[in-house]
Image 1 (cartoon, one colour):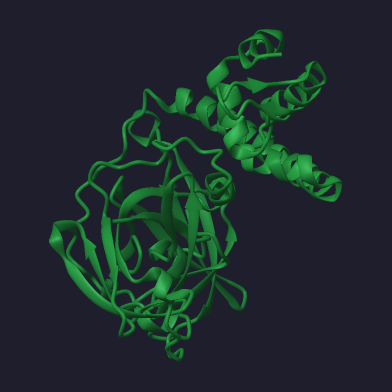
Image 2: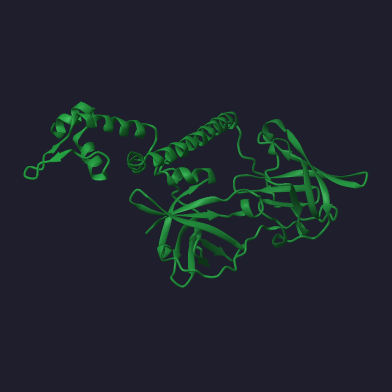
Length: 349
């Protein structure tokens, strides 16, 4: 039957059938070499139905092509898709809980206080503290330890002055009262952390820390670092200029590569990290906000940032017609907060 009749029988359009033919998914049984009319057999409707079911299940056309060619590839992709769907269900539930939390919190405003407090020393506070009680993550440190640096020096979003533990992030800033107590042979600090609705309720949550030592640490001492003295290995595929495309959380990475994330997800009109240019000699130049340019180096698979001694892994991926660079972003959240890195995604210019 002609392509138009076959399209009606399948409940689709001629353009879809032509597209499938170009991809090698569903080709006509015969093409008239004079008129170029395409002819299909009614038995091919079963193939079209299979393609449609696989698309509805979330498989891309490139994946479907592999599945139609190989039973082993089909089985492998079914297992992979099942795992992806399980992960998406988990993230969906997490998003639901987050949305519920945001609805509850929508009447609360971020807490902003004047944190430019004069520094007063407290020798007992200086050193390393083990967090032994942090209910409801009142203190947003993913790890077991926190530090009070000499002279109240700030690291990540934390600093201090006598009697005050200061939280100072871009989205919020305030000070919490702390007190130090000796219990037997141990020294403890109790920080009365302000809750998000502190301005309305005046409520605080007690975070308890045990003193480990009284060393005078510096930011360099406590920062996580990578070995950035890696030998240079060229990578012709990365050379050129890459412009910001989006910012992804770690759990979104695989979904982006499988084209599960829409093209505009994570877009930012004014990103902090604007572009990165790779040169053939192993150098790379990053452009940040306020037109700040920083020169670093790279070796195949890693951008080596000397400013904070981090080796940020990168990979190049093709998605649709675009070529993308996924670069680990080891910010203060990773360096001091112990969190997993996010990913900056750049598109080839």
